[in-house]
Length: 547
Image 1 (cartoon, rainbow, N blue to C red):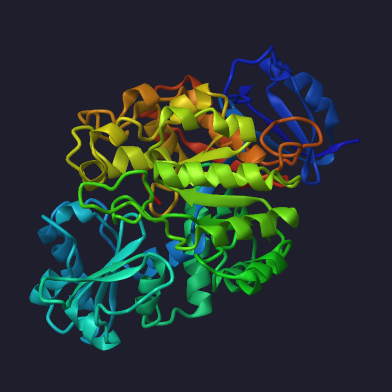
Image 2: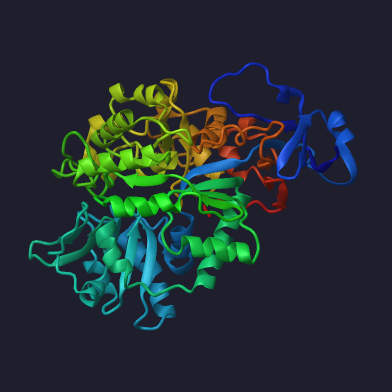
């Protein structure tokens, strides 16, 4: 049998989190592909025998081929639309800098046009976030800015007026419209149900425009080395966008979607999410259910054993935790794996307890997302229960500071900070640690997030002190978190995450071996090509930086 495609390189790598026995890839420098599967792996001289008259050959001298990188936690649709239509506030470290960026958008748009922004750093506020300054700087302009953790909005007084917010709104989850001492809304809108009141008034983005935003961003993510991602959502217009892109071309990577099960929802909603399972296109499909057991520490909506310095961070997002337990059992009984957002120690403990009660499913392991601060006694339970620890290392390096002056650290206190972002400890206790970005909340370029994971600081900031440096991983462990661990997290360990015959031909071709590079050099390590299902996509210009 002749191969459809052959790739020649200098070296093939198979990242694993633990030292392994000698691997056949040690002498391999070529891959043969037929259809969407790997046909053979080995030395170039052996693989060359599979070259036929119609075989397409790609030669990458000096390059290294890895299993395709997969980001296990991202939000590609709303993230792309937010970026495409909003003001980027990344790096705006003061209120003046935030307003300078908004001023350009205000000048360029009609007087009554909404101005939206993303990646707002709550540390720019001296105290609690407030939109009052937006009214002072831009009177009469509707402005809505999403905070960096994507769990809150800061809106201008004109938005409060347009929507008719009073601060007396009630919600079934931990959402709130914050008010000041005078009882009037400050413009700080916390958590999803309250945020939805604002989103309902956003200008509609046409489907073709939204699809262009998503396709363009996915192209950038692929150019950074991704061949797949797990979308921890499937809200409108996700399906319409994916189908529109595939009707006019091809998605540049695979997307595994897990719809959100809203807090305190009931069986009718659960059944709707169950009915979505298996819905698919050529490169996207729905598998799994996403829960948000708590919110975020920055907003005071995470669930810790003890309150934070504000007396908050002490309640779950699901007010009825028995409903969460019932919902987890509902999905487990139907063979549907779950992913639970749990940031606080009590949320993580409760999620593990419930997972132990409901048991595993065959399709894929249950997962817990984020796991920002946990005590020692929870570390071993992930391996005991085969629960995947899904972590985003760049949250530690880019949302917190080693000196503890950031909002997250000030809120939860030094004891819990010392037990934060425990990537190394979880791995050493036998957990499968799968790595993602939470893009657009973190850098979508995997080379940046994986470099941060090794350095425990932003890779581009050599003078920054590392955050919990003892939690650093090696390059091999980091890249395993986006290859073999990512495949395990999706229940796809028999066909993804390795370079081996009969596995899906999803590969990333790097100019240099990332496992042998210093972390500082990894963001500049060009991605020469990505391969998805045997289709080779060349990336002659691999961008550095955050997509």
